[in-house]
Image 1 (tube, rainbow, N blue to C red):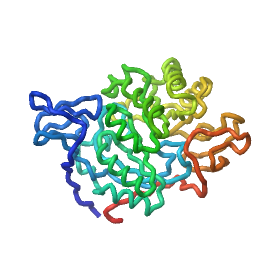
Image 2 (cartoon, rainbow, N blue to C red; image 1 turned 45 degrees about the vertical axis):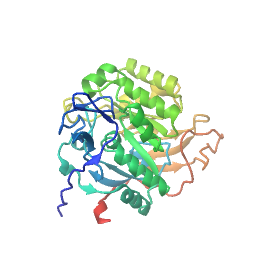
Image 3 (cartoon, rainbow, N blue to C red; image 1 turned 90 degrees about the horizontal axis):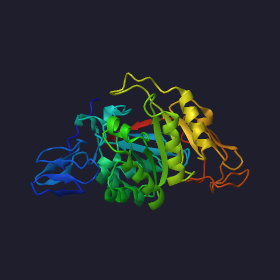
Image 4 (cartoon, one colour; image 1 turned 120 degrees about the vertical axis):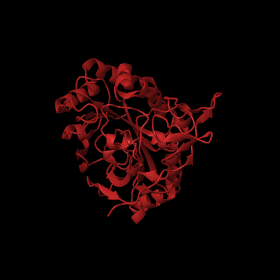
Length: 364
C-alpha cells in the first residue's frame, strides 16, 4: 500500500535573530546560517518565512522502529531494553562518508512518511513497552523543537529520552535539548580539525564543547562513537590523542565505541574498515586507562562484552545486539567483587533481543 504524502510543517522555529539587512541568522548550530526570505539553511529543514524562522519537519518523521537500545549504540543504559526510534530529514553537517545519507542528506520531503505529534509518539512508546524514545537516524539538533516537545511528553509518561547526535549545536539550545535527554551517544567523528573541515563541513572544538558540557553539566548519560575510516582518522597518533583527551576531559568511565566504516555516499572508493583496526583501537584505549571500550559493525564477542574494571569478569556478554549472559546486579555492581559499573541500570528480565520492528504510527 502506498503511503500518503506528508506535507512540510510551518512550525515556529526558535534560536534565531534578525539582522539589520533583513536577513535572519539561525542560532541553533555553529553554521550560523544567514537567510533571505524563503531561503533554507544548510540543514534544509529550517527556512525564513515572513520575517521569522520555521521548522519544516515538526511532526513529520522518516519512520518509526522498535529497536534494541544496544543499536543506538548504548551499552550502559538499561541493557536489553527496547527503544522507539525515529528521525526526520536533513542534517547540519555535510559528512562525505555519511552512513545514513538517504535520510540525513535527503531534500525530498517524500522521505517523511509518518505524521505524529509528540503525544502520539509517547503514547506509542508506552503501548509497545519501550523504556525510551530515541531521536536518531539524522540528528535531533536540527529538529530540536520537535525533540524537546516529544521529550516532555515522554517524561510525563515515565519514558526516557535518548539522543543520537553529532553534537554540533550552540550553547543555549544545547542546554535546553540535553537537559531533557536521559542518555546520548555523540559521534566524535575524528580528532582532527582538518578532518572536520574537509570531510564534515564543521569544526572539532564545537563537538568537544558539547561532550564536556554533557559530561559535567548535565544528568544525561554519555557514550561516544568514532567511525574509523581507513587512511583518514585511524592512525595510532590520532587515536592516542583522542583517547588521551577523553581520559583527561571526560574521565575513564565514559564508554567509547569504535565502529567500522563501510563505503558509502561520497566515499564509496574507500575500503571498509578491517576488523583488526577496531580491535587495535580498542586495545590502545584500554591500555590508556579507559574502562569501557567497544567495537561496532563487526562480529567481535570481546568488543561487545562489558567487563568489570575491578575483577575483569564478563558481566554482560553480547553477540551483536543479543545479550547472551547478564550478571550485573540491579544496583549496577559486579556480583563478584562489588565494583560499581558506570551507567544507568535497573532490574533485568528478558532482553528485547536483536529484532527490529518497523511501526507506522498512522496505523496505530
